[in-house]
Image (cartoon, rainbow, N blue to C red; front, side, top):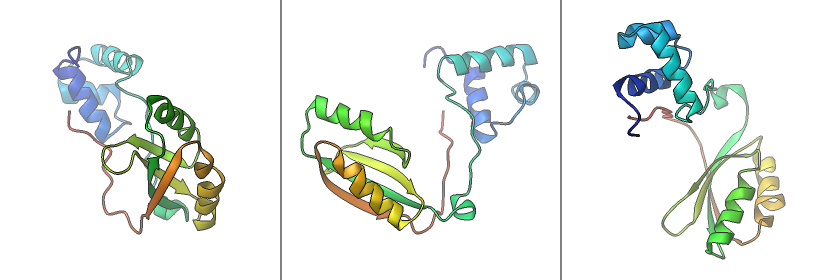
Length: 153
């Protein structure tokens, strides 16, 4: 974080709001010339501050997919078992997000499946077959009221 100056932070803030913003527009908004903005964006990308660019698709309008937040409690809490679970679960296409958490459960997974049958098939055919998976508790999303992908920086 110490390498980021106010211009870097400004670029990150603006690109979070509109990833299609041109270098020219970034420069205008940050009161800089285009060339240093181009170099800073390139540096932010190369150093992993910007992981990529994406379009936010409205899943409710574009498919009949279901979203589940699935809590996983592991049987074995050794570093080896937890790391093995993380390495395997992120390889599943249905798993969109994976968080190691505190509390009664060890992980929260955001799972997107084509339908309820697909979700059931995923749980029974893939997730439950991973070693050391104990308790699984699912919460299905009925509607999405807010999704903000920006972070305060």
